[in-house]
Length: 276
View 1 (cartoon, helix red, strand yellow):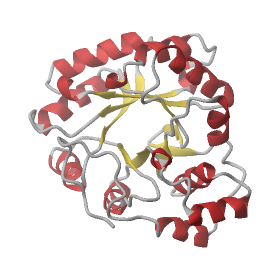
View 2 (cartoon, helix red, strand yellow; view 1 turned 90 degrees about the vertical axis):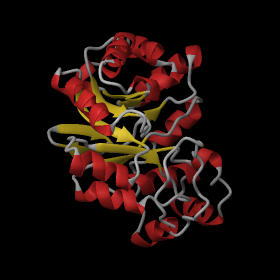
View 3 (spheres, one colour; view 1 turned 45 degrees about the vertical axis):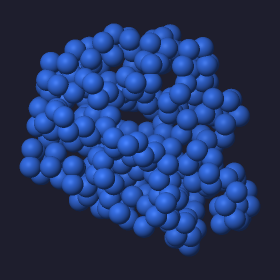
């Protein structure tokens, strides 16, 4: 495994995403992920699987300190007081006293950012999360959070894959000692017929999914959290630490970004940065 270092905290660059995994399927997949070697697990209040993940982690026999666990506060819990109560509920479901990374899931403006971020920081001060960050924040929103409000954020989790450039966000996170986490890194399968990626897969004797995940991890300050339900995909996604893409390979993948590459775009989301 490779790691990103945030202060004294080591973050495994490859995590296991659990969006849309619920019930017994979530239990089976998370157990398989841990057996395969994943030690970075990503969930969220809105995923409705924190209870299942807590059950798996507590019964895994793996020391809590060896798991990097992320959850996210949903939009209806952003007010001061409500945020802290929702985190306590999440911790109860997850059967742990703390998470390693706590994120605000979406940048909602009906509650002032200062109030949201102060509440988030209070959870960290209480020892209930080691690190704090955000998800789906634009550069302008990151700048308000970090430069104006002064929140000690270390992470922004965003959609990121070969068809969607996140250069403006990456430029900001890099200049502020933050790391980026890529969700939907495989573009929900949209890239599986891409000729450039197919050629790279054949060159390295790997699958297209493995090529994409390797590309993301070679950024050096990007973690990826692919979701998988089948044993084969869980294992395949993890089998990416025995090869390296060349500078030319990396450039070819970056060149695939396009203006219409975004897949996650709810009507109530922010006005996204233009980057391709």
